[in-house]
Image (cartoon, rainbow, N blue to C red):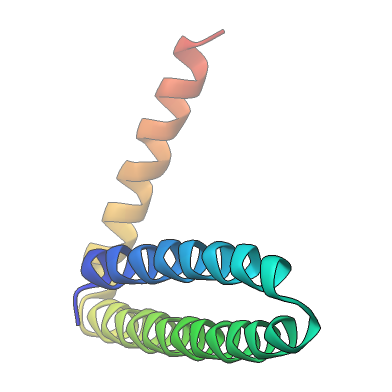
Amino acid sequence: MDMSHDKSALAQSLRRMIDEADELLKSAAETGDEAYEAVRDQFAHQVKQMRDQLDDLEQAAVYRARRAARATDLAVREHPYGAMGIAAAVGLLIGFLAASRR
């Protein structure tokens, strides 16, 4: 599952939902209370669909983050001295960069 594709699809769905809701609300305002109730129900359904899509994206992101954390943990356990060396090098680099800004 490609995260940038998911974000793009979610953004398009959100734009489409907003456009549809805007059109429906305009038409409901012109036709009266009964139409307004129908529009409100349809809008509530669209909001529920968007929430479901956001929940799916959130679950996918959490899954990927956990998988990355497990892979990192495994790599550190297999190569602890290499991991310490990399951490020390990154720390030194950050220290040099911070010191050069003063």
